[in-house]
Image (cartoon, rainbow, N blue to C red):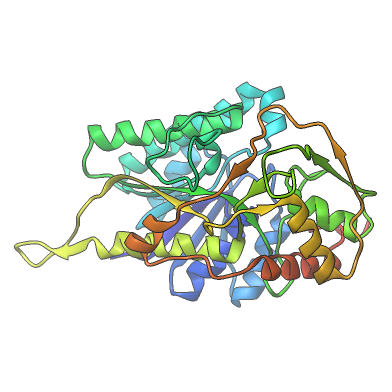
Length: 354
């Protein structure tokens, strides 16, 4: 059986870290990315870290002809699908762009996969699909609802995958619902490189600490939480990458000999799995931890809550442990230390000094 994996969006933050994890256990990877919100430099550095060139194809998941060429020239075991737009605010301003890329693009990818009989997919989903949770911790059976077009696009893809699994039982479709990815590679060579002002909390904190931004805006200090600020389940990107490796290993374990002794894979249909630590950390707790690690003061001010923000969100990761043998191992301290190393070494991200 081939061990070659197509990684769409493999030049991005989570994709690049996952490429390293896949290489470390012997997977052969092909990265497909249109570089719309990622960098070719991330691929260059990832190649250096693994000690060999990565096959890279610049392409859009909506480009059916280019995808056909890629599938025709490789024999893939499966696809890890990271390619997607991910900024909540931008999705509110440009919903059609998000539905076109994230939903239509995924449909095109699935159609080409079906043409070439590649029916193993690991989809990059999000805890956003749970909306404002009714109960904590959140498990995979929790009610799903979304408050913005980004989340709706992820949920729409999940519904498509569920319907596909019902219509054709030969598919194995694992959807990994990430909670709040942070951290960076311990080398400091790859990390999160947001365009313009960061949308996510950790890169905002680190850019304040390094002096690139003046202060952190904390949206709301009157939530029913330990200190009034929002509580989230922050997970190290290295742990997240290992979650994808564990999911692939799970798919490979479904391969058994048939009556003729020929290896055949048992399909698993649609399988949602949370990837989180199971612990909540408040915004102020994260700021304090980052200040301790970096030795830098992180000035902040409280501002009004944002529409759609929720008080608390953290995972039940029991399914990942039971089925995949995976659990998060790295701490908030590890996350802050690795982000600070990345930020110090790369004050302007992958761009040359400005």
